Amino acid sequence: MSQPSYELLPGAGESPVILHVPHSARTIPADVRAGIELDDAALERELDHITDAHTAELAEAAAERAGVTPWRFVNRLSRLVVDPERFPDEREEMLAVGMGAVYTRTTHRDVLRQEGVDPGPLVARYFRPYARAMTEAVAGRLAATGRAVVIDVHSYPSRALPYELHGAGPRPPVCLGTDRFHTPAGLAEAARKAFAGCGETGLDSPFSGTYVPLEFYGTDARVGALMVEIRRDLYMAEPGGPAGPGVDRLATALAGLVDSVGR
Ligand SMILES: [Zn+2]
Image (tube, rainbow, N blue to C red; front, top):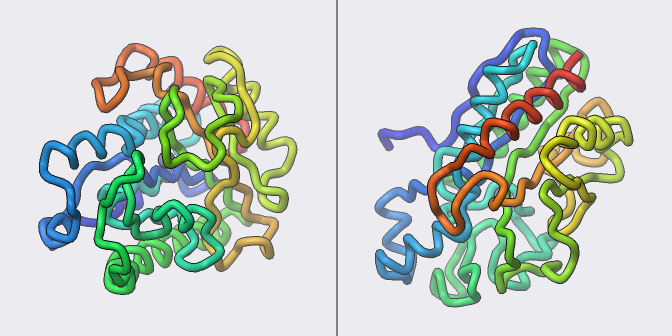
């Protein structure tokens, strides 16, 4: 494979912060593409809906503006290869709509992969190495600074897609996903303040929870985590269009969050 599946982009040695960007890329290796049932036009449409477009660039701009440079962990493959944020087993509620670690359904509930396809090979080749690398990235911050703060950088469509399990709830400009164990009140509050200039901030609707590598999940309170879900109409043309001027304000807000939790 010529191109890496993911990348850890180093930040300052003293920074505990990792900006995690799992859903920004559209790249699908040819052999994985062969297992997807959509024709090329339908696949492009699906990528327009499912990809958190421009979030890698947003994280990069935020990293450049931050007083202390955060680390970045960026998925360079599409979530249609594997979704690194899902549980790889029955714990995953999205399995009910064909969107566990290896999706079998599209955002519009059409067939993406054949029903009953064995997710094992994709999980072994892409999901597990990603999870291991992210675990090591968090362990690295813990070793260097005594703590880690994972800020998950996502975006979501302004109108609910058919696959969403909680699509009836509020869709604020900025949705913060929290975890009872890993998101201290101060972390969510810091995000609320940092994004105040971008519009209203809501908690855990329409998407909830946040990513923590399983090795630390629910056991190591030194690992803080928060998901930032930005409504796409704040910064881009939906679906799948170019980024607009909104990116600038969001990058400054995200840099502000990095600085307020990173010192
Ligand atoms: Zn996402």
